[in-house]
Length: 408
Image (cartoon, rainbow, N blue to C red; front, side):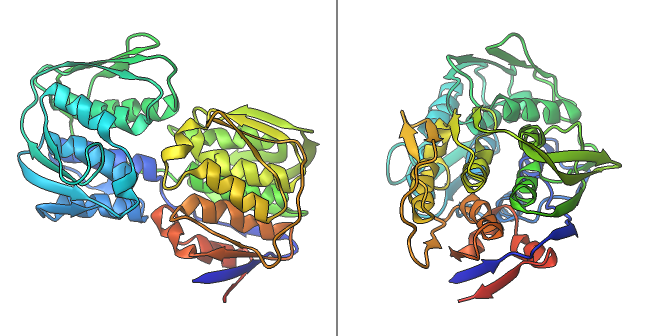
């Protein structure tokens, strides 16, 4: 399937964003470990969260989480401490995404996990039982979801968990998000110092909980505002003081001419004329924003050097390689350095005629490239349905804002 997206001349709209996937998925695991006394309100309706809900509620012995990487990691830890034997699997791409670091850590704590096909990769056979060991050390430059998966099961371990991270720690805000939610649900979890975390063996307490809107999804509306000549966009459900690390998007887009005006549980995006001449930024704590800013800066003709991107190599696709290829179709030559840096200094090449952006089963490729049509006459997107992973109504929201979307 391919669509053609065309932008309106100006954009004045109010968009109800999806609920935070990051918060929803963590809250589901924590609530399940806390005996699910209360219902969680305003859960995300994205694929990743719906997969998690089914996995926790359906009681099946084989769990297919499709392309949901978060679900694979969180459920691997959850199933390790939940009685019974289950198989967890996913799409072909999911079966190529490494999980050995997490499996090794869980085995070190006493978990019983087997690889069914290839060592180091899903599918897994997990037999859950009580884990007795309470000390683990991991490199800090692994995916924060591995770390969060271990932290969330820690309150129900016999002796809690002492976790030491070594070297550079990436995506620290996501670890902090996990700790904050754990404590909201009655756990005692904290940083002891820059590298050590401690979780006490204190069970969760189920509480009423409302999930805020998703700052990652908001990034695409900031992008649209930045690329537009005239725009004012209201986004309800966003909090200035947010648990989400990607709320940093507001601060970064201020450098690209977008002011965030906060009201009662909402933010209004307005354009200013204060735009940086170049943007150098370390995305180590917000890797999911990288695609948005790569596309935005290039289209605004703002040179950039973005570091801290090493985790992009193991996302839904190799996002660094995908960005280089797809931006090349639009006439921009990006440079990769050491698998962790992307830069653009204004180099251009000939555009591919009638280019269509490939999405690589990656929701963020589709959503980050759709706003290109605000600057160019149109953009074509292949397999646009991938947005259902995190923002199922993205295309409908674009139509609401005046964009024209045609299936080709």
